Image (cartoon, rainbow, N blue to C red; front, side, top):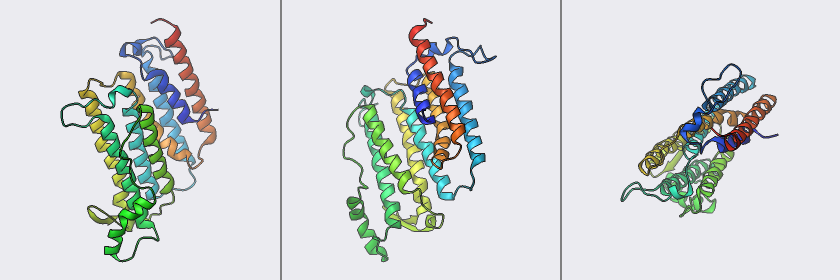
Length: 280
C-alpha cells in the first residue's frame, strides 16, 4: 500500500509534463464533468486539505512551538519541491543573464545554508559548546567540520540527484531537531550576525528557502521555462502534502491516510492510462 507521499508523487509523475491543452481533456468525477483533467488535481488538493484537517483533529497533544516552526519550514521545502517539478536536467545550468546564477548554483547555495543553520542550532545545544562566549564563537567552525555541517562545494548530477541532495539535508534537519523543546528556543546561538536565540535561527530555515525559491522561480521564467498549468497545480499539491507529512510523522490518522493514498494512487494510474492511450 503506498503512502500519501508516494501517491502524490505518482500523481505528479502522471501530470507534471502535460501541456496546457491536456488540461481540457474530458475527465469526470461524480457530477463534475466540465472542468477537464485539471479537476483531477484540484480534487486531490481538496482531499489532501481535508485529510490534514481530519489528522489535526485526531492529534492527542498540541504541537510545541518548535514543532510548529518546523512545520512551517517543511511547507517551504515542499513549495520548493513543487517549483522544481517541471525542471529538466538541461535547465540547471542555463544562466538567466551574465553574472547571474543558474538554478544549480541557487540550489547549491540553499543546500549550504541548510547545513549552516543546522550546525549553528546544534552547536548551541551541544555540550561541546564552551560557556565562555569568545571561546564558543571560535569553536563553531570546528564543530561544523567535525559533525558534517558543511554544504558540498559542488552540486553535481541531474535534477533527480539535486532533489535527492535537498531531500537528504531536509530530512536531517527534521530528524535532528525533532526533540527541540520550547525552552531551548530561547537559548543563544552564535552565527556571522552575532548571538541570537535558537527561535530566530529556526525561523531562518523557512525564510531562506522562501527567499531563494522566488529566485528559482524568476530564473526558470527568464530561461524560458515558465510553469505550465499542470505544474502550477502540482506545486499546490506539494504545499497541501506538507502538513499531512508532518502529522504522519507522529503516527496520526493511519486509516485516513491509507484511504486517501489509495484514492490518489488509483487516480494517477487512471490519468497515466488516459493520456498515454486515449487520443485527445
